[in-house]
Length: 496
Image 1 (spheres, one colour):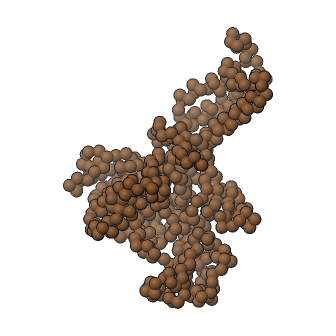
Image 2 (cartoon, one colour; image 1 turned 90 degrees about the vertical axis):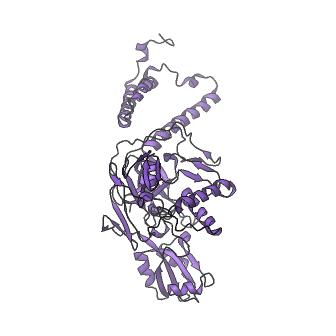
C-alpha cells in the first residue's frame, strides 16, 4: 500500500487513459531508438506513472483549497509543458528562421520567415544541451547568453530523411562565428582582425605584402587592437558550434567536389553550374539624366537596401573615364538578374550598364584564405577541392592555408609549420585524412553575399537543416498599411 491505494487500484483506469499511456510510451520508445541513447529507457516508468500508477503526485496543486493558487499553478503547469515540448521540437524537428540579408535574393527575400526542417538531413544531438529554446545565443532585452556552456557533448547526428544535394538551400551555423566581438559581428572576427592589422601595418608603413606569413602577422596585429579596444569592437566572446549564428545559402559544392569560378560562372567538377533564375550581379548604370524612379525600381525588383546612387561629385572624372561613363551624370549601383538587366537595357534613357569588378569602391578584395597570394577574387576563384570524410590530401606549404582551419579548428588537431615542414599533433607529415564532410555555400545575390568565397568550407557538424517553406514574409521597405505583408509569398517553396 502507498498513499492509501494498492497497485491493483492504481491500475484501474478507463480504456481511454490506457490508450493515452500506451501511445506516449510508444512515442518515447521510438524517439529513444532514433536517438540511440537507450539509457533514456530508465525514464519510461516515469511516463507510465504520469498516466497510470501516479505514485508521484504530479498534480498535487489541484488539491489546494486556494482557488488563486490552483489557477496560478495551472498556468505554471501549462507553461512548463509547453517549454519542454518546444525545446524538443526545436532541437530535433524544426525551427523558425528569418532571412536577415539579401544574399539569396531573388530566391529568398529579406523579411521571409522560414520553416526549417532539422529532420531532413538528420538533427544533431545538441553540443550545448543546457539552453533556452527559440533563441539562438542571446536573450533579447537582457542581452545575456541564453545557454550554459558546460557540459559540451560531442558531435553526433541522427539519421535523416534525405542528404544534401547540389543546389539545395541549407541553413547552417556560421563556421567562423566561433569568436565574436559583440559590437562588430560583420565581417567575422578573423576578417576584422586581418583588416584592422593590415590597415595598422599600412599606416605605420610596415611593409608585409611580400612576407609569406603576412596573413598571420596581420591577424596577430589586429587581434591585439580588437582585444584592447572593447569600446569600439565590444567584448570578444566564444560560442559553441550549435550556438553560432545561423546562415542560409545555396550548397554549390559537395564533399569531394572541385569548385572554380571563372568570370562569375561557377564550375563544379569542370561543368558549368546551372544559371538559376534568381542569380544576380551588381551593375553600374548610367542614364541620360532621367531618374530611375521608385516604380522602375519596384518593377526591376530592387530593394531600397541594394539601391544606390552616386552623384557626379561622388564619382571622380578619372574613375568615370575608366568605366566609360559620362562624368557629367551620376551613376546608379544595384543588383540585377538576367531578366531585369534585359528589361533595364530596353529603356531608351539607359545609356550604359556595366558589371562591377572586385576592386570597385574598395581597396582590397580579401577572399578565403585571407592574405594568400593565389590571385583569387570573388569573380575568379579557385580551383579548390572540397574535403570529404575519409579522403586523404597531400599537404604543401602552398595549399596548407586552404585546409589549415579545417584541420586545426574543425577537427581539433595541433598544426604547426617548422623549418618549412608540416607537423600535425607533433608528427611531421605530408598527408592528412579528413574526419568530416565539408560543403561549399554561396548566395544567389553573388556580389552581395558573404559566403564560402570569404570564409571557406562549412563542416558537416555545422549543418542545421533544410528550409521547407515561407510561412510569413514582411517587406521592410513598406508600412503595415501599404503592402508590408507579402501574402503571395505565404507557404511558398523555399527553394523556388
